[in-house]
Length: 74
Image (cartoon, rainbow, N blue to C red; front, side, top):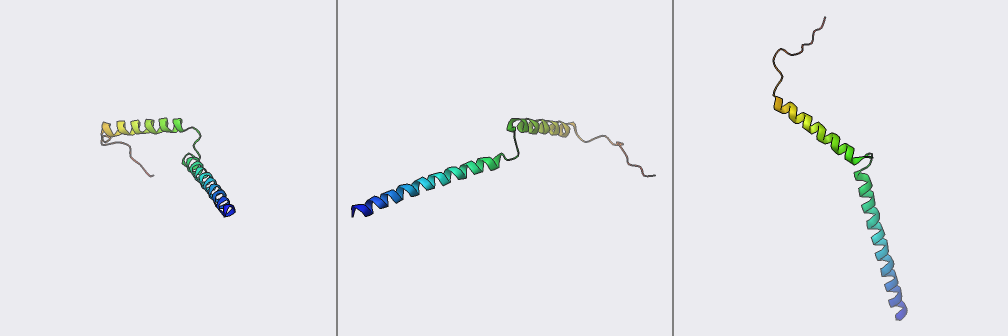
């Protein structure tokens, strides 16, 4: 009876260790996938903020005046 109990506990420990390793691997893959292709996250954030600032300035300035550029085909 002790043999079966010991084997059960051993199997349970191995199963828990495997589950923990799989969970760690899944978290690592998610982190890698989240920043795949982006080497410098801070510079990307700065560029995004700069772009938003420019778009905000354009929106606040209003529509362009009439009589702007025209396409001519000859």
